[in-house]
Image (spheres, rainbow, N blue to C red):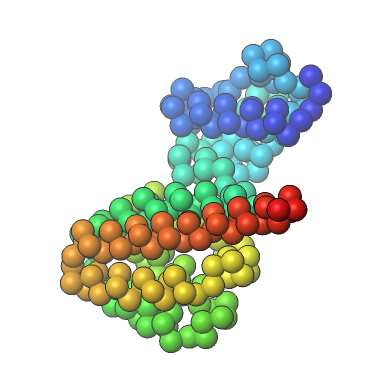
Length: 233
């Protein structure tokens, strides 16, 4: 079978799945290239490319003359988020994921955060609401607002996932800025902050959820309009 990107992804996803399911644990030797080729019907080139991706991120380790071994079994490191400029559909998927992720984080933040973290959140919110609304700083403060909430959950996995998402969103900040503008954040953030200060996790979580639902709706509308424009409608 000739090399294709899909073949590489097939091998990559299988390895990640086996590690996530604890079928292959840290220190375990994974299949040989030949077994991957036989089991999945892919080429050695596809297998090597998939393994090289995981070696580059320190999830796998190659030992010359011995084989390839699981080096890191932390599930957060296995999240396959692109590091290049994403497509609009990639960005929409992140926003949809955040609808439930961020709204749940609000509840955990109010349960576990310190007074200092709440003060920090208020300061970032103040900077967000008073900076140039069409500058890069606006979106940086917006991302930081959500990152502080994630950090305040006291859950290392939540914090790492949010850091990964933020890194990729920041890389695509210009695109998000162009499509979304500042209006949604300006409409929702003051109310989210108000109910966080009141320690009302239920209402703050619902408002965060609605904030991201509306963001996703706007972004999806943009994608549909672009598709129609490209198709000549």
